[in-house]
Image (cartoon, rainbow over all chains, first blue to last red; front, top):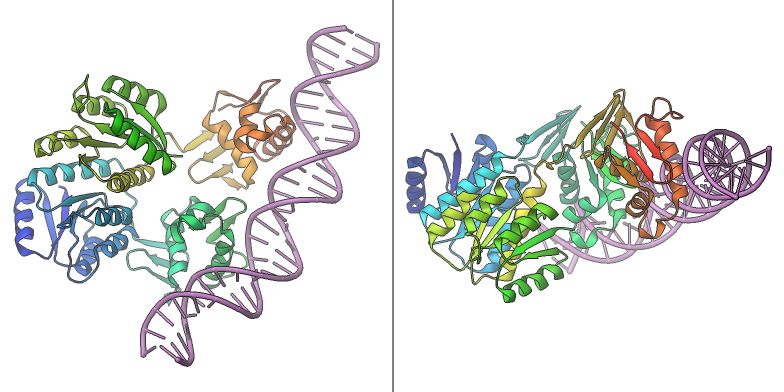
Length: 226
Length: 226
DNA sequence: CCCCGGCGTTAAGAACGCATCAAAATCCGG
DNA sequence: CCGGATTTTGATGCGTTCTTAACGCCGGGG
């Protein structure tokens, strides 16, 4: 059974979607604000998320990036704003589709089917909790602990670790790291990486000068080994 | 660089898209009708397809299903028709997104980025894990192991091995190897290849002086035999 | 038979990339 | 506006990798 998380603060829309989706055989989860949405998504792992942008507590793009930190679940954005800037922002934050209100229910359902169809051909390894030796990395909560003790990371440090852990085992090129953490313009500033990898190792590795997890592949990039 | 196939019979739109996409660094392929579109897609394997529905020869949904028969390349549909029935039909035929004309260029670009991003996190079609005797070559992780032991390769060594393994069984010319690994200016420096092939054999072959995998084709090039 | 071109092998200096420390600049909350 | 945290920048030393050169081998053609 396909499970849909609907996030909207308007009870009327919520109700309409719930009825329509349930009638088509979907299991419907609901959340009325961004915080709850992140919580439900982390807890129940829906197959697809329908997200209204006008939420009372969090900015829509923050919800999207919060989810994208650990999950690749398809996100379909609903919004009353037709402004193309909003669309660009949401899509670039990681949304899969964007529909403006008022919308036709059959169109939403078709886009939902398209999103689920795409996702079903994808691999599933979406575990937001990663363990490696004495390290516990919670991608959903954005927290790292070592020997049970929480380790504080700065935003940049977390950005690097998250990217590496999400591709754990794989080699991540310097270009990709710089591009995704600092932005496309910084793709050649490989010096930043050396400074921050040293910091991460000091915080996470048992022996910072002989890394077990944060491995350098000279001339190519870095790798998280678990 | 990302390659986009644009399918439209209106030369004006074709031109506008071509200019805008090229300016963003995309490589643009074009087709003016459905038959050509299917042909170009099969021949050149673009990374994403932008498809106008109002084509002179074929119905739009037929083009989509024709593509979906063998390809999972993302398809973004453009259409002048706002009718929701058309959207449903196109999406259910296998399209990934649907934009109605007139559309904002920045919105199209954002949806394009979203489609490419999704596709790039999918299993890369071809098999990223190649086995040959006691060798395991993981193209995605950029890792090689021999008898279960990890073998460390330098960037240049990996570049050569990757190219040969991607074309395993086939002969790869010295020119191509030099051009892709060192750059177009080095296409005659065949000496480099001898040095590096010797290194690779020492690291990978059971008996470096009687290669089983990294085969020299004298005067022509090299071949990876599995 | 010997020369020559293409290949394999080895070795050494040059060039490059990395780790590390430290200080300056910037950001951010109170 | 201040002070601490964070990011950016600079400088140095070290190890690895690339480049280049030298030499031996083999087979084909003159």
